[in-house]
Amino acid sequence: MKKILLIILDGLGDRPIKAFGDKTPLESANTPNMDKMAASGVCGVMNAMPKDLYPTSEEAHLAILGYDYKKDHPGRGVLEALGIGVKLKPDELAFRVDFGTVDKDLKLIDARAGVIESVKDLCKSIGDVEIDGVKFRIYPSLLYRGVLVLSGNPVKTYLKVSKSAVSDTDPHKAGPHKLGVRVLHPKSFGDSKEGKTVVRALERYQYLTHEILNEQKINKRRVKKGKLPANFILTRGGGHLKSITGFKEKFGKKAACIAGAPLYKGIGAYMGMKIVKVRGATGKLDTNIGAKVKATQKALKRNDFVFLHIKGTDMAGEDFGDAKMKKDFIEKIDKNFGRILALKNVIVAVTGDHATPCELKDHSSDIVPVLISDGKDKDDVDKFGESECKKGGLGHIYGKDFMKILLVENSKYKSQVSKGESKI
Ligand code: ZN
Image 1 (cartoon, rainbow, N blue to C red):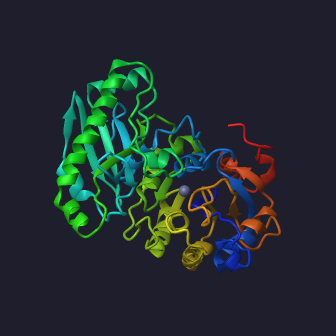
Image 2 (cartoon, helix red, strand yellow):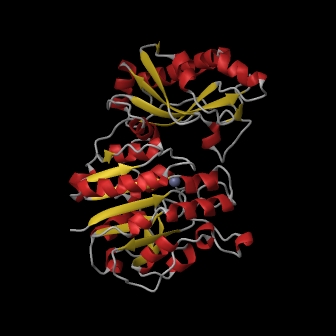
């Protein structure tokens, strides 16, 4: 059996850009290596999720990797926690948090506190807290991001009586990036007493930490310099560990995951993949792609399946809305893909989890291109890009079919694809 390398370039898909002669950033980028891969395989276009749903990265990845993005989704908080190495127990509740800035009426000024460089010291200043039997632990992640874990008896009982978690308090994510709105009250699901205890304690924790954060030297210094203080813990993606079938058990493939950003390491860890540490893999535009590719070569020796994730494509689109930046980053990726092109006996797939059109600075349901290269030219596509891939032999596929297609070697690819719109 050939080994498989799945490369996901986050937010790869885009829309035609006028300044690029109505080509997308990928189409206008010089990508000789990916073009050769497209030429020696089969191409197509994909929506990881049904087109009428907003494609989050985590749900799109679950779908592409062969999992049910609803049933198997433990909540973003859990994936982020696993991604930064937090040992979570199934009876604990984990949230993804952003350190944001609110005014005195708790109205949101900035959900990222002016993209503060680190919240490590701020997390330390808060420490462990207990309110009404609910224990709170906070962990720093990249930049303004963190993970909040709730444990203790009320949490345990609540998770037993309600399979759901707790609603988001971040108004930035609840609406279409809404600022100037008061932070939301957390809500439990169902009528349980414990659920109410948990959300009451969480809200008190948010108020308490708001006061602590406002008093921190780092924040006072930021205010003096005219920067935004990181003075509120915005929670979202609450969830608890679910037991799912591991990747190896599900597909019979020993798998490794190479990623920089915690969410994607968390997705790999959740599926039981080995998480390969790579120095210089930052999950940002400055990531060391060469080091990640070398680690991929190495990981392919010991594993049957390697998932390589690169985040910068999405960041250029979502954080900067900069098509030139996205194009340049794609070219940088391609320059490092010579080693991938040279791999022997490896099926290489390259795609994105969703489109992040620069004009939207957000994810969208536009298609992403897909290539699956196994050395056999199965269609006429010899350039990797959205328009070209539409003409490919795979046609239009959905994320839920992706692993089926990838795992069937030398088969009639199209017969593996379910017809029409996804029903899930
Ligand atoms: Zn994504």
